[in-house]
Image 1 (tube, rainbow, N blue to C red):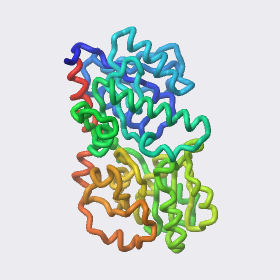
Image 2: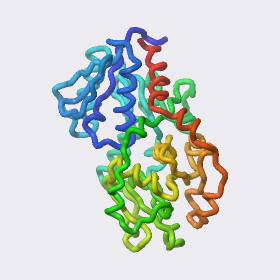
Image 3: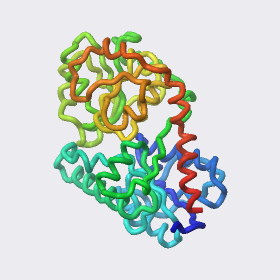
Image 4: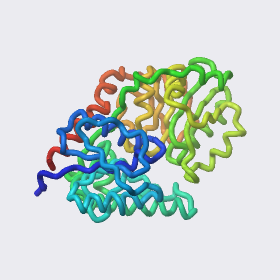
Amino acid sequence: MKKKNRIIAINGESWCRTVTGIERVAIETTKELDRLAESGKIELVVPKNAQNLPELKNIKIVRLEAEASFFPKWTQVHFQKYVIKNRRLSLDFSNTCPFFSPGIEYIHDIFAKLYPSDYSANPRDRLIQLYSNLMYRRIARKAKKIITVSEYSKKTIADTYKINPDRIKVVYAGMGNYSAIKPDYSVFRLFPELEEKKFYFSLGSLSTRKNLKWIIEHASLYPDEQFVVSGKSLESIVPEELKKTGNLKNIIMAGYLSDGQVKAMLSKCRAFIFPSYFEGFGIPPLEALSCGAKIIISDAASLPEIYGKCACYISPDKPDVNLDEVLSQPVESPEKLLEKFTLHNSAVRLYDVLKEYF
């Protein structure tokens, strides 16, 4: 039986991190929740060193004196102490939870559990993997409600941890107001060799599951095709193949690009390519579709569920493929898909879950 009249405490550690996919979801969803929430029902609990906090009308911001530094300490000590002392119900967006007081907890995917070999053997990576697995298991067993971002992730979580699927609520991820971002076409001055509609663009962290290996192997087989890869390495969780890109003249490793630069690339590329072999949702192809780009994506994990007939598909294990033929696959207009997967719709679904505990 659910305990009512609980105040939800959002874990605000995302405001202390470099903004990547999960952090962006946390930050933007919180803003959308503020537009939906009744005053006094939700708090955003942030560390002392939180930056760029939003102006919120209905969600109260609580800034603690403790800073977020060593990654588990904020959640497991300071945030957890606040939640227990003040009888709050935690809401965590990033695959973690207060160990002794799990509340409403997101598990976007269980990558560290399913693909342990993708983590290197150095101590820091091993710690990240062990901590991730500890959190997955704790959330699966003790969370009041588990939130995930696709039916695929729901099934993998339920099957792996042998739990009742009814404990898991699918709240599809969504895209914010991408139209508000102005394309920065000056990025093409950095790469003057690029010709409009004659290059393929890829975006994402350079972790192993993003499958840079596919692009490298394909590019080596088709030297007349041009690829631009934008992404930031995640410490040592980097594919060995990254070292090989320097030997291929038809791959440009663009590094980190701003949102405006990414949008410019998406608007001018021949197609956006996303060969990832494991995604809980996969937002970058959604952003590409919103820019009018064609998308070529992996037929693995959640991607067919999310993108349906709006995408051209490749196998993540078969790089020897004719991309002209792939792009000749019939696709549907993405209009309905873009209307479905918005941050507002995601926040509405999440708020429906939260209201069960108010």
